[in-house]
Amino acid sequence: MKRKVLSGKDVIKLGYPEGRAIGAAINTIVKHFRRSEKEEIYAMLRKVLASPKDFINDSIWSKVALELIPTERKSLVHELNKTRTDYRIYGASEIEEGARNQMEIAMKLPVTAAGALMPDAHQGYGLPIGGVLATKNAIIPYGVGVDIGCRMCLTAYPLDEVFLHRHRSNLKQILLDNTCFGRETFERPKEHEVLDNSLFKEITILKSLQARAAMQIGSSGSGNHFVEFGLVELGPQNEWNLAAGSYLAVLSHSGSRGLGAEIARHYTKVARQVCLLPGEASNLAWLDLSTEAGQEYWLAMNLAGDYASANHHQIHERIASALGEQPLLQVENHHNFAWKEKLPDGTDVIVHRKGATPAGKDVLGIIPGSMTSPGFIVKGKGNAGSLQSASHGAGRLMSRSAAKQSITKKMVKQELEKSDVVLIGGGLDEAPMAYKDILKVMYYQDELVEVLGTFVPKIVRMCGDETPAED
Image 1: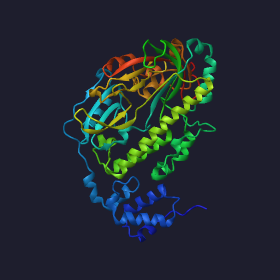
Image 2: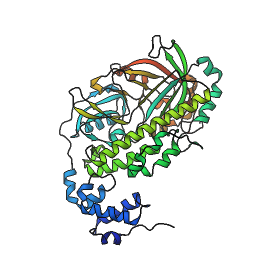
Image 3: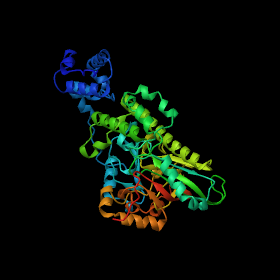
Image 4: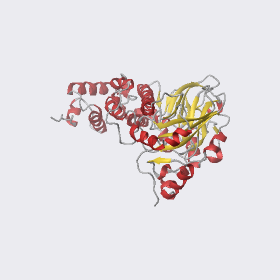
């Protein structure tokens, strides 16, 4: 039997004034409390009506609270600073004007303390992809990004180049059998302790996301996410005390799937309600970390990061099992995240790395190229100018729409053959030609990271299972 949704008359009887507050209250109930008992809903509505100021920064009830006391909106309006805070740009000649304009706006926020732009930067939403922004006691959902905790993970095995070439068809089948992309999920997803996190019961927005997270765990998104076999090349006296040479390796790129996307969507909406900025900066609306909404987002963001890591670990566990091998080394790092750090002068800040790799002193990471160009295992140098960050990849040279309009399947096929790469899936918007030259990108960040090894992709799987054919 379908539960009857509260009517406007019911809300008015509780004492709510006629107007926009009633519509906001009903929308909130329908969205978040459809399965709650009527007494519980009434109690919550009375609580908000009695003290709306207490709910201005609430992640669920902020819109209702602001409709009840519209005069409070004035205190939520923030103007940009007239001059921007200085910031470093790495590889400026390779960065499009749109990304630089977005960074200029971000550096005028009243909460901004420092920033930097990586050489793979390109235009995104709010903060550019490849942008690093340090703020004072403020978290910007779009400064983190939609795919919260998106990361790279590389595992190398005691198998060599000869093994890869001899078993190429088997390795292709291993990818098909042990990875899922986009809407595809495993028939029997694995369990993981991250799914039992108490936050799924404690934070309202997360309650409806637990089942979806359980269904999608161990899978990858669409777009630029991938899982690939390739060869890692290590020199003598390497970090892992392994013999110099080539090793079969698996590299994966994925994030927090629907869980992260819904967290980003919800808290971005809340941030825009409680932080009113000029139009050009509206996507940079922030949540004060001293507020309930700010604390909620921080906890939810960290949960999404843990979930993204669990996805990768399950991908690599499945592949290791199929290979029947134990890994020699594993390197993992994430981006699209925010960290509590200190500036050189001791100032406490929140560092947002949207499409940027953490590169603190001796911190390991992976910076991939395209599907036909090398990636790099790196160690951070802890450069203060970049806020201890580096690029998260080669970065886009073309937008997705431009790539689809100018690149043909024949061009992709020729590029793959030239590099001896097998591709499973992947759209024209992910063609190698749509990306910057990774060697140039690495050149521009020589002072940020030390290269420890290279990874050359050989069998790549992305969303969709049709290999590009000639037009």
